[in-house]
Length: 410
Image (cartoon, rainbow, N blue to C red; front, side, top):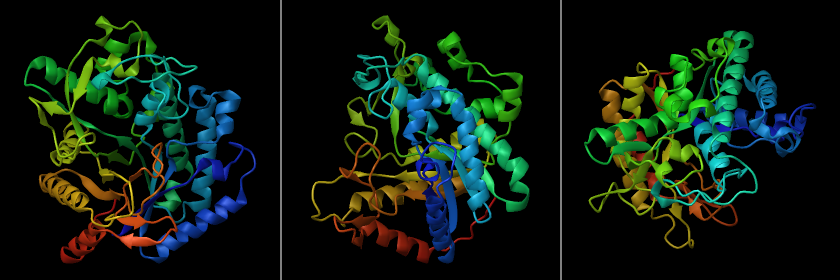
């Protein structure tokens, strides 16, 4: 492996959200970045991974308020200045589309704002929340995240890129949606689901507007852009990052025939299932391993966004962790990577403009909202922080040493 992807915590750099920088954090990340470089690895650095200082939530409502845009750009400026001389790949936001939906349409992810008691895709109950509006807030937050991204990119290009020679993009969560049937209704439903997931944040950058399906179905609840904002969004990516693990079948469903509360997850009129005629879409029970989904995802970027440069910024699988017994024998994970990378390689050979792929993940970590209950690492980390290579790590070692390839860089 010749690259390492890591993130910087905004709340470390600015514990108060803005104001005085925390020099201890700057020193810490300088040491981490220098360590990565000393090992011959190219760092890809993410500025925001679904977290920011709590003070921003407390003082003005976080990403619901457009003040978030200015504060993020200020934080990004600090990072570009402190670390940009050594960073060649920047990711502004990781999975902003996933967070805007989950954090503002469900009780699952912080800040846990939603309209209570909505039943949606796959019969899921999105939970009870003390505050929120699932039909408006996800779109407001997504809008502000887009503008914060564009502001950071504009700053980077005008102030730093000419001398630092780095590239900048963002990474979106991408669950591939396959039509349940070959009827026009289900094919259109699957496309709408992808519009609401990917087109939501990509179309304004490439086409200057939200997808037509979103405009039609969300209507006045969808924020609008000013002419100046569209100009700043235009082309504000050097690459697209996609985090792709799995797929679902999509089929047409008008949730509003039985529910009168609006919600982001209901607006696309697309329901999801993991089964077709009783047969699962892939291997597993909840999160299915679906090797062909990675090829479908990169081919979609290839076909819909002019084969724009892309990284698969995350792919991998986490398994429930019950005990340390047999934890290094992750044969299913070996099969996952082998089959997914076979499909990815086929897509690349067929012309997909993929610049690199990152495995999720090198080490077992504290997974977002799952803690230690699921482990995703190809290296097992025990309670004393000792590290043990899993079979998947040995597979990577053998695969990479057996088939060395030249890697293009942007």
